Structure formats: structure tokens, C-alpha cells
Length: 327
Length: 251
Image (cartoon, rainbow over all chains, first blue to last red; front, side, top):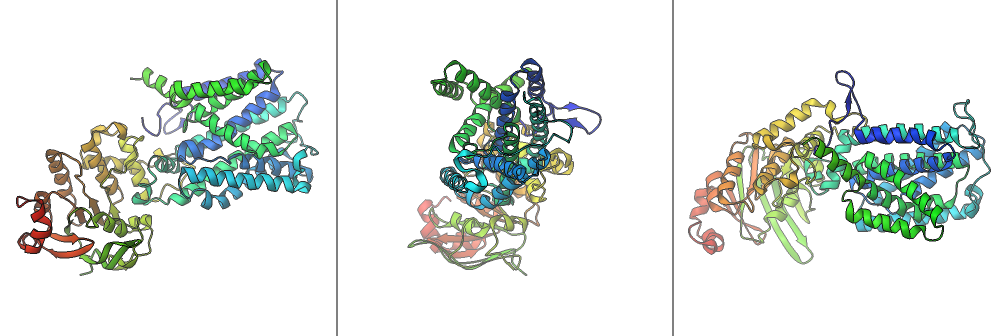
């Protein structure tokens, strides 16, 4: 296995679309879902948000091997930033998205020196600690965040000044879908860049990296910044499409959930993580419909089974299948 | 002539234990310089301090006449001081080629680039292949490092270091754990390195040390016992007593 797979579609000399078989399938399924389930735009949009959030965390855990139990901080910051901005009268969704990316990116950059220090174990504790602090701060800053009630008294202007966010959520869905595609392609590029290679180097052997001249702390700071920005985009999308920003968006459950989702999808495998997040969202919704009381039990069983039966998650399965096809 | 690598009164203390005591070395450019000594003499600790993964308690490190004592490990690499490890430190789940390719990109300071495909940098890829060719690993370029035989991993250790284009290369037991026949092959490749490269190596096999080293420093209990040519060292009665004698006269 090489870092860069040659499974992309060649489109003329020197150009290559970042489309592997699994990615094509994922993109097609997402577009089709809009036609197949026109009554489920809200759910589909939430799942797209989860997918973007998962991709953002995969950059850290999957590519750089940096674990975190507080990644929802950046999702929440993105949600609050765009909601607060909209409340202040700046209701353009794309502006909200940009600010929703910039604020968490900056915070991530500031946090990175204390977060990347130490080993996995200390990182879990530090990220958990930072997340608790941010949660409590958001809870106390009632004037800004609405406290435990959250923020819902804001408007979102029509997308590009043309497409109003309708009641069924069609515009929201298309908006989230387009954002997902762009984020996916951007992260595909990042993970196949020299920087992406360095992140995998850190994951594979952080001890060796300085011995080949690598500025490890700087790489991790940039990884944190990018990851924070993408998580913030997911948060802003969530706030704009649900017209709501609340404490649970930066809470521990979201942080823990995304660790599960990325592991299920397959660390460091973009398409796998995307599919894993979609599957997680669908299964979670189906189980909670079947049994509102015991759905978490079912989810736990699915997750445990996936760890024991599907090594490397969904991404690992895709890898094994594609290797079998081209011996 | 300015030494390629020098230390003055370098000491490294772990609590009450002084692992390296006031070591002063001067290694001339282009040297083939062996560091020998019994287990626990502080050889690897000294290498860690030289290359910057360990902070010395006292003393200075000079690289080509410039003070490098306060440079980070990565900064020293960019100044030309590169090491290999006694215990393989490779990127196990990346391919052989990607291991070296990454090292080339880091040396060229290209790894800050996240908006362009790594493949756009053809020159780096070619250079990585050339490094692999030098250690005869090019046929295994696409294999995962985790699946490589141990001897090949030792060679990849060297290729990774060479990708950083060192002026001073510190090899920490390059043939550690390798059967005698393979260690010959590894030292044959080390011998083939350019003459302009300054080589410092730790080695336990006296046969190899006396064959490849031009100068030898003997370290005992963290201190320099003596330094000289292989002939000097072989004739030194103190060395025979504390080091060679203990390992047997055949060495």
C-alpha cells in the first residue's frame, strides 16, 4: 500500500480527479438519498453534518494519530459563532460558515501547544479538561450563548440571496451536500499533500520525525487549525439548518461519539470515515425509532461487533476488497 | 582544521547518576570515527545528546564550528547532523518508498505544503528512489515496512538518514541484531558512502570496528578512556584490560 493511491480517474495529462470507487459510490448515494427520501431532508442534513465533523476529526486521529475527547468544542464553537453572528443581523449563510470556520480554527491554534504535548493518555485528559472548561464557560455566558436554553432567535438569509431555507429542509440539504463535497475534496487534497504525508509520519513514528528534520509541533498545530476549521464548518451548518445552537453541540457525548464514528469508519480512510458516519447516523436513527428506550444498547452492540469483526473499520474493508480486485 | 563535530566537557546527568562525564571529542571532516565501550558506557546517551533528543547537563556541542548546544533535534538535522537508531525507528505502516520520500520532503522543507499533491514534486520522488537504490532496497519500494525482513529494515534506517543529506552521520549500532553475514553487507554499504561524509558509529563487533574505523574513541563509565588509531587502541593495555580483555582476546 502506498500513501497515494492511483485509483483516481485520469482526466487528461497530469490531471487526476480524486475519485476512487468508494468515493464515487459515497457521492452517488448522497445525491440519490435526496431523491429517494424527500421526506427526510432534516435527517439527511444532520447526517451530512456528522460526516463533515467525522472527516475533521479523522485528520487528527486517523492521519496524525492524535486522540481527543474534546473535539466537539470546535463543532460547538462553529455553531455558536454563526448563530451569534446571525443574531447580530449578519444573516448571510456563507458568511456564517466562514466565521464558523475561522473562530474554532483560531481557538484550535491557540490550544494546540497544550494539547499536542505528552502522550495519548495525557491528551485524553487535557482535551477532556479543555472541553469541560469550554462547556461551563458557554453555560455561564448566558447573554452570549443563551445558556442551557441555547440560541434559536436568529434568522438565516437565503443562500446566495436566491434560495430561501424552506420548511422541508430541501435548501438546507443541498447546502449541506455541496459543503460536504467541497470539504471532502479539500481534505482529500490535504491528506495527499506533503503535509498529509508528514501527519502519517507522526502517526507511525513520532520519535523518528525530528530525526529526519520534521517540525512536529508546527505540523500538529496546522493539523489542529485545519481540523478545527472543518469541525466549525460542520457546527455552523448544523446551527444554520436547524436554526438552533445549544450546549449539547460542544458536549462530551458529541466528542465521544465522533471517536466511535471515526474508528467505525476506519482511521485515516476518508471514504471509509464518510461512509461510516453516514451508516452511524442511519443506524442510530433507525434504532431510536424502533426502540426509543434501548437504542443505545443496539448501537453499543453494533460498535463492538465492528471492532471485533471489521479490523480497520469500513475503510479497512474497502482496502481489502480493492486489493483483492487488483492482485 | 575545524572539527565537523566537537564536544567540550559534555556531561549528562540523570538524577544522581552521571551517564556521560566531561566528554570532549573532536571529529575531523570526512572521518570514520568509532565510539566503542562496554555496555552502559554511555555511548547511546552521548549520541542522543549530540543529535539533540537529550539535553546535556553541562558542556557544549559544536557543529562545523558553530554552537549547536541549544538547537533542537530537527534544527540539527537541517544543519547536516543526522543519526540512525540502534532500535529501528521506521514508519511501519507506510511503504518503503514513502518512508524515504517523507524524509526527502522534510529535508526540502516541503511538508508545510497542504494544498498541493505530494506527487507534483517529482524530484523528491526520484531522490527517494535513488536513496533506496543505494541500499539495494529499490525492488522492495512498494512493500510495507512492517513486512520487511529485519536486515532490510536496518538498511532502510540508513536510507532514511541519507535522505536528509547529512554532512555528519551518526550510526548507532547499524548492524545491531543482524547475523554476521548480513552485518558485512550493511557495513559494505556504509563503506560505500561518500568520503566527504563524516561518519561516527557505535559498534560492538571489534572485527568491523578495526576494519572500518580510522579513529576510535573508547568510552568507559561515561568518560573518555582514550582515543587513537585502531593500532593505538589495539596496543593500549588499559583498553585491553577494561574492554577487550573482558570480551576475550580474539576480538
